[in-house]
Amino acid sequence: MADSIYYPTRSWKESLLEKQDIDPGIFEKMLNAIKEDFRHVNSILAIKNGSIIFEKYFNGYNKYSLQNTACIFKSFISAAVGTALNKNIIGSLDERIADIFKNQVPDPIDENIRKITLKHALTNSTGLNWRPPEYYSNPDNLIYDDIRLAFELDVISEPGRVFSYKPDPQILVYSLSHLSGEDFIKYVDANLFRPMGIVDYQWDPGFNTIEDLRLTARDIAKLGYLYLCNGTWEDKTLISNDYIAESTMPQIWADYPEQGDFGYLWWISELHGNKVYYSSGFGGQYLYVIPRYDMIVVVTSRMDKPHPENKLIVRNLIEDISVSNKNAVTRRGWPVEKSLFSHYNLTKEDKGRLLDEIRNYFYQERDEQIGYIASESLLEFFLNTLGKYIYNKALDDVRTWFEKRMEDLESDFYAIYK
Image (tube, rainbow, N blue to C red; front, top):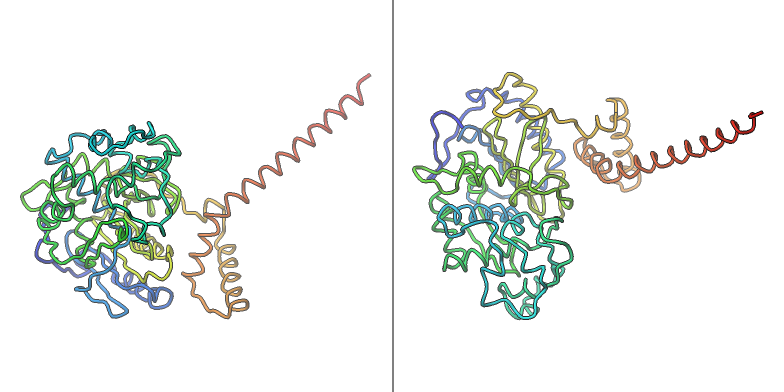
């Protein structure tokens, strides 16, 4: 962080881009891209060194609007666990759920459930076979809305081994409420939200409304700032530095929906050689933290479809800042990220040709006109999801061809023996 740390408990400071050594043209370029290809975006907020450097709202939203964070709420649950560790309400992340709820464990129970710990819930690796989402969206199916729901399930993989994008974090809600002796929301309000000045929000953490945390874009950003400040806020340590570090380092490899390293309910990645960690939610809701530049970026979006292409907004922004700021001090040494396109050895010409073909396809077959950034997002999606399978199939075909050639070669050798 900057030498003089400012805490936006009441309000965020604002700063001109020039004072942060950032070319205003970078954000002008981003804004034009949003207007062209990202009309579903509701807000974009960028903060550097504790000051807002860019803030725009669309589709009738403003800085006071409460927005559905979708699964960003999970990173707030992780932060709440961090406060409980700091207050010794939780003794260790290795505490087993069955030990926390000794009097509520049914008999008999799958013995693998007894192995599940708080850490497994934080890394979405409990191994529980959760029911499909539509089950929890129907209140009639919920005979009870508490930890007994989890104890009824089967374990389909050993806890801690396999990531699964399921309601594991809900176990943390029940556990924290049980251990603290308080309603979960009251606990979060007293120990996380109010210390940071978050007073206007809506959150019902029940199974049937599990994704309903509504905050302003500015208050979403406060969570990122707390982590940049290593868990301190004003004169208080809300979360230990050790927990912040563990939360934002790879704990398990995760597939759907982000396909990458996962910490304690945070995704970990790199953008143009910079370590980043981020929280994401359905509809393209993103909270990005970029430690190298002391930056936070928040994107909120319409929830009509997944909109993973919103990551391109942040990716291109950080790439442009990195290119224009090559002499910036690096806080940690991280390897330079190889872009997906370079991995598949796409030349600039090849990439341009493919993007043209995607745009032409949408125009001719679907009567839709899409821009350059939208077509680039589709190309990246195809490379990331289909490219590896095609690549591996090609390798298998080459190996089969070589094996056949070697068999023929061996036969030829035997044929010329005397």
